[in-house]
Image (cartoon, rainbow, N blue to C red; front, side, top):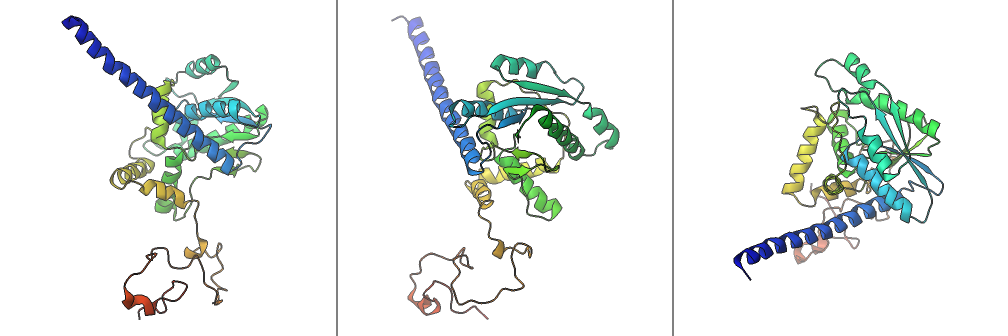
Amino acid sequence: MTTLQATTTATIAPTARQAERTRIEGNKLAKRLRRDVGQAVADFNMIGDGDRVMVCLSGGKDSYALLDILRYLQAHAPIRFSIVAVNLDQKQPGFPEHVLPGYLRSIGVDFHIEEQDTYSIVKRVVPEGKTTCSLCSRLRRGILYRVADELGATRIALGHHRDDILETLFLNMFFGSKIKAMPPKLVSDDGRHIVIRPLAYCRESDLAAWAELQQFPIIPCNLCGSQENMQRQNVKAMLQDWDKRFPGRIKNLFRSLSRVVPSHLMDRDLHDFHHLEATGVPNPEGDKAFDPETFTDPAIFPLITEDGCTASEPG
């Protein structure tokens, strides 16, 4: 073997290994995302047999992934449901209006492009420098509800993921004084539609990796996410920092949303504190959340009752 041949072989071998590694990681990612979406759909009964699912497609990574994964489930799920992709063209200057129709035709998906100049309304009504998200979202919701009626959609699918849900939780606590996130399934504001979030269990990092792997034709949004100094961006940075410094914290935070104990909060509408009385029956959800499960020091045995509760509290 000549020196040139040896060099060529050495160059090709790592490249082939890298390609194989990329393929394997891509398969793992696909399985994880499909499993997460399938689990969320099942856990919250998001889609039933015969449903017509309107997938709201913005051109961002999340909505592309949502459409892609729902199409996979459509082909493999034990139920039958139809999909129609809907994009709201808000007439933003420079919006590449040809991208989404071209992509959707290439994959053979039924779609509808709704043209409404909400951009001009938002710019006219919202003062310069102020956040446009609230008004833009309200206008968008109203239009999408109407389009859902016109298309005969029984489900409106949005592309919010796990990170969006947690960010909303903290935004509501920090600035709204309430414990409220994004529900995976809800009845729309007008009471006429079911809105679902099939990506509820998916991590944003997984969706970003999937978008890069699939090479979706991403369209950036200049009305919301790209605005600087938004509180949502600050909360996102906080959560990302926690995720790096404290592995597992974000997962635990998310799991806590499905493990709510109203008796240990302070909402009197959720728990009847006023009529609370001692029953003499041990409460498995009592104040033992952070107590050690086992005790080895004999000195504390007299202070522990048979049910594991402290016999007396410090004075």
